[in-house]
Image 1 (cartoon, protein in one colour):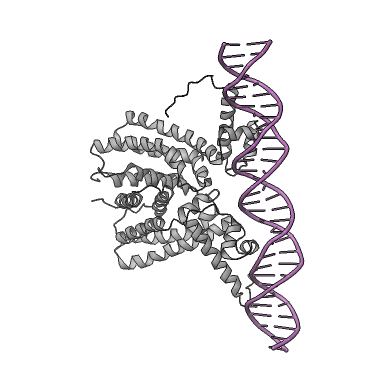
Image 2 (tube, each protein chain N blue to C red):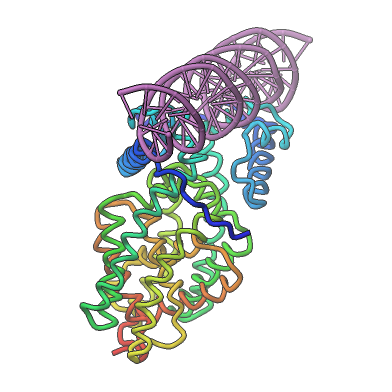
Length: 193
Length: 193
DNA sequence: GTATATACGGAGCATCACTCCGTTTAACAA
DNA sequence: TTGTTAAACGGAGTGATGCTCCGTATATAC
């Protein structure tokens, strides 16, 4: 059952290279707003055959998720750094702003999510976990410090933040998103001042 | 320029009937999670030809928007009713909860939105307006009553709420969404208690 | 150098969005 | 009722796209 693969061989270098090239092309395309780019085209730009693309990513969603996930990982990694640099509530505020800035700057996440079929499912479950862990640690710290109400569900905050990414549009967008962060934090305090 | 159509004839009854049947089938399908249902299939279930579907809705997005818009209209209509029945802040809270309940019960909005290509654009601009007006009037009343800070942008709240709809999943979802509503309202008060 | 697991490429298939146009029918007038 | 006509219908056909299959090529190990 739990048979461990003993790696008979080192992974082939061309395989890894191609995989990264595909991810790179896809990320660039999604960022540029070409959410509907045909997969043939992604393969062509990456200089590989369509078959190669499908071996690395079994379907369109898998490719999108891979791009998406790599970005989220980087976001999650920022959490412990911020926690070390600031007091709990400020660390959370900073992270939430980072989230917003991040989405604003590189429009990777929002368009990709919108392009997904029935985003309800697997993708969130998988990729969401790292973000969940990140926001979870920050909120826990704020609660432990007595700054936040104990009944705050970190996921609530994450959901609200994700919403901003979906309605991303218009000029005053960034400022508005930052105000929302403040609203959320104020609303979560144990005894609002 | 502004030539008014003088309706030479009454609209044909079969046309209207078919249009409504198509909308009905599409709404049901989307609600059932069949976001990717082929349009041929929608036409078949509605008992019309594919050509008829395309005459009423020039493309897939147009059909989705039509369903989506009808639902949003009903949500917007609830705002003035609630405003008449409750004090400002409670009217807003009630409306936001309605929004959440609505999405939870009939999963029309979230899946449809996710299925859209680049939700950034036209659809929101069009359909969003009615919701915007609804939440706007409720928030304005709360500000006028001195209950809310004057710098609250109603759109911020709408965005956060929309986020919930996108991360809709899991069992504790509804309760969590209601907590979020409370957080948002507490965070928006002029002097939080 | 040889063997072989691994990866590659792209022709081909199935499906789906959307178009086109000949046929049918509801509305109106006489 | 019947004739006229604008309006609506239906579905075969077209092009594009997601995905599969399998023969070929090559990196790794010995």
